[in-house]
Amino acid sequence: MITGKYPSLRLRRNRKYDWTRRLVQENTLSSSDFILPIFLLDGKNKREAIPSMPDVYRYSIDRISQIIDKAIKNKVPMVALFPKTKKIKKNELGTEALNENNLVCRAILQIKKKYKNEIGIMCDVALDPYTSHGHDGLIKSNEIINDETIEVLINQSLLQAKMGCDVLAPSDMMDGRIKKIRSALDNEGLKNINILSYAAKYASSYYGPFRDAVGSKGSLKGDKKTYQMDFRNTDEALREIALDIKEGADMVMVKPGMPYLDIIKSIKDKFKIPVFAYQVSGEYSLLSNAINKNIIDKNAIYESLIAFKRAGANAIVTYYADRLDKILI
Image 1: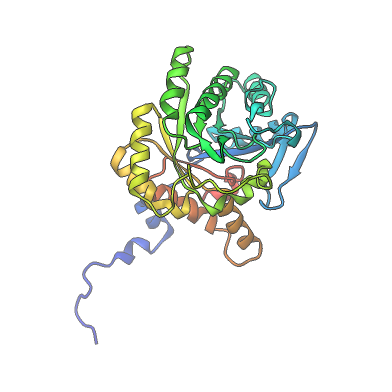
Image 2: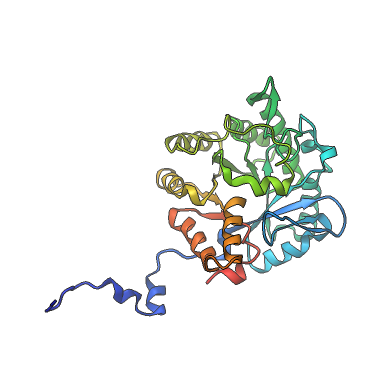
């Protein structure tokens, strides 16, 4: 029998009521922590379901206002644009990326015309939505060539910036592209454009639904392991981050998110730079399907998002960002 005053310190006292739990909570979420991805498609008055991603849709440009209006109402700071390019417009060089009338450019113009600076616009800098082979760069002799790809990415970045993009997000993982893009922006008088570098982007199995959403899944030849990171490595991520900061990145991204919480924490602890996490399509679909089948409770969404904040993420790219009014506790 236990007698006396044991234990003298009872941590459960701080958990006894909801109000005490709220008083001592260490991490919180608000709408300011989120970036909403939007998938674009050609056509008029279209909202197209993505079978591999429950409750996520592609929108024609004339219908994106319905989702942006909701994002602004929920005080989401930024949207991220991703196009599903028609197959006929794709080729080995990804030249549609440099077309000022492509989906992304037209969407930027429309958003800026209607909303001015009420909400930020983030644009992906990579060639995979535009190439017939589904890779993020140019191919020569079965190799993804680095320096030649960067020249295309520079022009893609300048085009998007001139159209009105606020945050350029190179996700290609070519070596040295941040320095080249930053220099090109400065030379064009675009020094105030932010660069969010996908600095620690892993060659992951969690990207499948996204590739389906942008139409690159069926066309991808081989894998991306020669330029995206090996998921067994941690120190390499820190080296990538250090290089991109030195080259001029304002913020850095870790992708995927949940399996790489240790990477997020290591980066935040070491560099004290804004770190963003991407709760990628595979994470989203696994979670949503489990909830829809009543395998897990819907509060798992909030729990997963808090995990990013606990690890040190400043912001989270997530497909749940259009439902924050139902998710945030």
